[in-house]
Length: 315
Image (cartoon, rainbow, N blue to C red):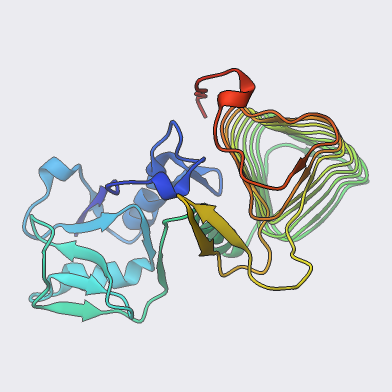
């Protein structure tokens, strides 16, 4: 079986995570999305090839769709099927040289699948991937006075200090420092070279490499880009008082996230002043800064107030 991956035509709806990076380079469980999908395909027996080497039997999968790999195996082994369609009628994957404009022969799959269009879709995928962890892998140091209730992957050179409580499935990269007295729970991934300070709570979030969350802060159901600095006492709220779904503004349209808990999406290089409060569902663009005691009530996507035109970091 052979498969190839396609970058979507546009990924603007996933900003600010896709400001300066392709959707396939966004992180899920500390892996780039393309790498994660490639690993899943290879484990299922697919040879993953560049688009230029595709043939009539190649399965084509856009990186903005996540689907159980068993459904792709069915498509690859089918003699007649050209398209894999989800229950809503959307094209998920196809077989052949060209993307079909219309599908005359298809498989309608009942497998779990969804499109990765908005930042909260990446958060959902992170939850699903980490939810499947069934063992721990520890290459760093966990202090005897720290407590882990769940499965943890801890990278080389990372330290978990006294009083830290980890609950759920958590991945922590290399050369990180967690604590003391921090609380990390839910399906959370923390990239390489990060620090989570004293008395910080991280709930069900994705944190890119080289990011630092200072003491007495809270981050819930959020995605923090690389080289982010959250000042002491920063609160990234994740729950509405009325208990309804969070909505987020995307290119002028208010989109229902279908989530009861959703925090913020914070771009690369953002710095918050001490005691900053970020409302649920807000987005902060790359390189933005806030003053001490600031309240982020609306999206801050333009970089003009920071004095920078753009920022770009390697992860």
